[in-house]
Amino acid sequence: MRERARVGLVGGSGVYDLSSIEGLSEERVRTPFGDPSDAYFCGTLRGVPVAFLSRHGRGHRLSPTEVNYRANVCGFKMLGCDALLSASACGSLREELPPRTAVVPDQFIDRTRHRADTFFGGGLVAHAGLADPVCAVLSDALAESGRAAGLDARLGGTYVCMEGPQFSTRAESHLYRSWGADVIGMTNLTEARLAREAELCYASIALVTDYDCWREATEDVSVEAIIAILGENATAARETLAGAVGRIDPARRCECRDAMRYALITHPNAIPPETRERLRPIAGRYL
Image (cartoon, rainbow, N blue to C red; front, side, top):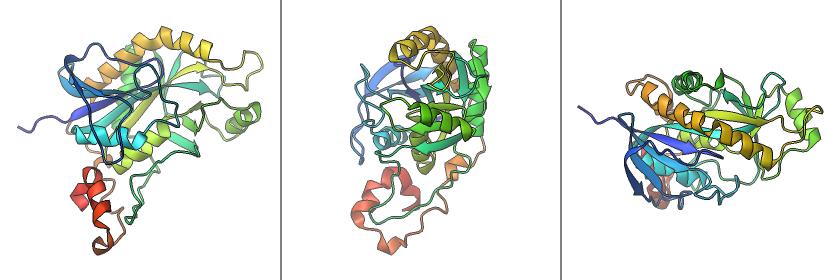
C-alpha cells in the first residue's frame, strides 16, 4: 500500500506552532529557490503525516514581501506533500464579516508588486490556469473544520492580496469594496499561485481581525487590535487546521494535481540545462 502523502500546514500571524503534532522532528530543506522561512516541523497529526512551516519564521522575522514563497512551497513539495492548508490574518471589507469571522476564500485579486510569484522563466515558459485558484476539496474541509472548532467560518469570498507591509489607505479600502472584494491580506495569493504551479492542492482560512480602514464607526486597523483578536482565535485556528487534515481524502479527484500537464509551452530541446535542473523538484514529471 502506497504511503499517504504529507499534508503541508502554513501558519501565519498568530498561528506559529502546532504543538499537537506527534513524533515531531525538525527538517531543514535547501531548495533551488533558496531557503524557506524556517525549518519544517514534521510528524503526524491525528494519524496523518504533516509538515508545518511558520510563514514569517519563528519570532515573526519576515515581512510579507520578504517571505521566500517559492522556497516555502518548493520545500513542501520536496518533503512529499501533495496538499497545503494555510492560516492567516485578514481585514474585512464587508459589514457582514466582523472581526472574529473566518473566511475560506475562493477568489483573489492581486495587488502585490515586489515578489517572485512563479517558478518558471529562465528559458522555460509555462502558463498555469488560475481561474479557480484554490482546491474545492480542501476548502470544504477547512470550512467544516472551522465550524466544528467554534469559528463562524464562511465558505467562499474574494481576497485582495496587497503588498504591504503598510496597511491600506482609506481610498484603497473603499476601492476594494467597490470591486466586490470581501477581505484583504498580504500573503495568500502568492502561495496559491505557486501551489498551483507545483501541482499541490491549496486552500486557506483567513481570520478576520479588523475592518481595515473603510468603516467610520470603528477605529482604523492597528497591530495591537490584530494581535488581541488573533490571540482569542489562536486555539480555534490550530484546531481548524488539525481537523481539516483528517477530512482530506488522499484519493480525492481534483484538477490541482495535474494542473501543469499542458502548461509548459517551451520546446524541450530549447530548455537550458540549468533551468531544467532548477525546476526538477517542481515539474520533474514533465522534464
